[in-house]
Length: 212
Image 1 (cartoon, rainbow, N blue to C red):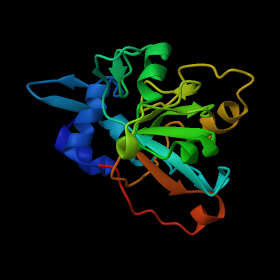
Image 2: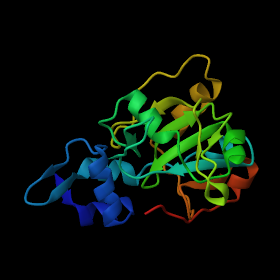
Image 3: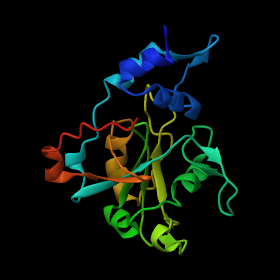
């Protein structure tokens, strides 16, 4: 059974443009068109019941969250894509996600974990965020994390299973990737990086914030 994008948005609790981004990213297996885009009911129901990310189980007082859009091609020297899309292979996706972002690079590096969300759902996780590099743009500098690893990402939001295998030496990736992928992680920010309280702060935090 299929839903229209408007019906799917109501079931999941997001906006219609967000549903369209899910479809464009390739994360909705079995989606189709019948004069207009249609969304599998099973997937919408699965996404609606998805738990929030277990923030209280994460280390440190906060976690940075990279909020991305659907992958699009760019004319950069070191990458062909920016954003998230299931058609990208592991290497392309890592290059598309590890920068360049306006953020506090030291704040991001200190966390050691960077969940990546599309429409408020964790679709990937980056680790090994030390030694960031700046483009020297002054106040509006963008920062990259050239040593970042990609220990996990999903290709299906109905049944979110890690599409890669973390490096055995990546402690953070092995520990936190399984508990984050496919969960809902609402965040609010004026830029690509949001900072969400974790640990004891998260226990009393009722975000009430959706990335739409």
